[in-house]
Image (cartoon, rainbow, N blue to C red; front, side, top):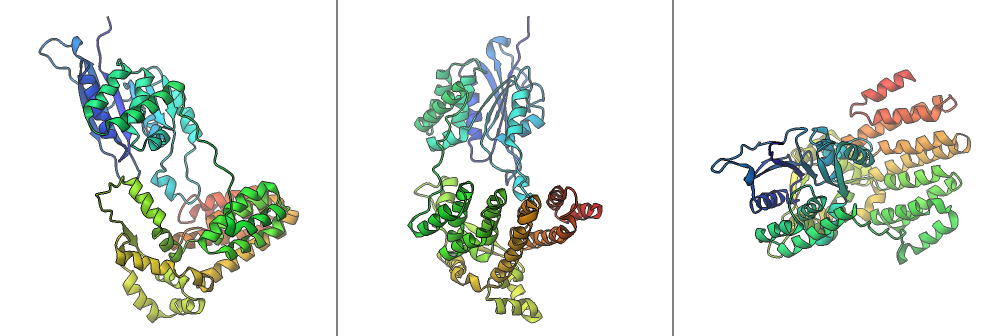
Length: 487
């Protein structure tokens, strides 16, 4: 005879996803259907560095001597989990890393969408974890793996992901309860019952079918009437393989500055129209470089109507609630000089007295409440400087740098196409503003200074790629210096 044991369930969910509600439903589900139930939770930390872990144990009452109580564990034990639920793919990876998923035992339910972690967001390069590897690891580690984009279903239902995951759990058959018993637990909860049942049904259907319905493919990038002339230029002057990237670039630059800035973008790329992959890569990186981040851009994005709407949606603002948004601003003297007319900006940077005066107002930073009229107008006034950006110190410097970069790419494309491609891709080192931009620019210059000595050597493109990867490996440039010493 196999002794009775508890059903063990671990749930990893981030704030705002209804993990506590899902835990409560599981407790109610067990208690209403002949089980003792216990739930504990270990809170995660802020800024997407970890989720809250909810742990639930259900023990059949029929297996307990009358008057006795089972002893249930307070935390999940690696190798002892019947069900593991992850509300996002990185959290699924964390569950695997902790050893919570066992091939011979665990039903693993995970949403395949991504909410990028802080380490992924702050990486110098593309720090995203490979989703395909996470999925492959999850399939190999679980007795049964149920995966779909449950977040998309939750968004369609207009609610949190918890009822969708609850439906997926019901469909998995991992618990000894019928679908109706799951639904009754939601009804007993008494809050948002109709919407939760609809989301539950969507999750149940997706899990039963094996995956969530695929989102329809988006239409090709379309340019409106104001940019129609630039769309015609793209169609007439550039190869089809580059059209989509070029349209994205035009849209970005017209939004960043104006139509003339977008037209300048196409003018600069014309000499590369026969360079194949170099053109496509250059189109992407040039669009990013020509829309560099400065205080004007930051203020513009923070005062847009769409941003207020997005924040209100993220916090699920009710009509009877007020929303306050605080922006933490800490501009340096250099960033202020960047948006001033070139002559005035150079004077500010050269004058010790002027720097000291301006520095007194910027040293401690400032909190600006953009949801108030006064705070909004402060940033709106900075955003209104956009028409004057072409006369700014930073604009002049960036145009010169862009011109030198493109000239080098054009020269190399004629004789060393692979090297030209790596020079194009090295632009990814130059991004952000403040200290981040300065570090990236120094690393970029170091690599560009090495190009003349490498261009005719065997494996030049590979060596340039390795230098760029070394520059992205750390903040202090140590890895790049070590790699340069080996060249």
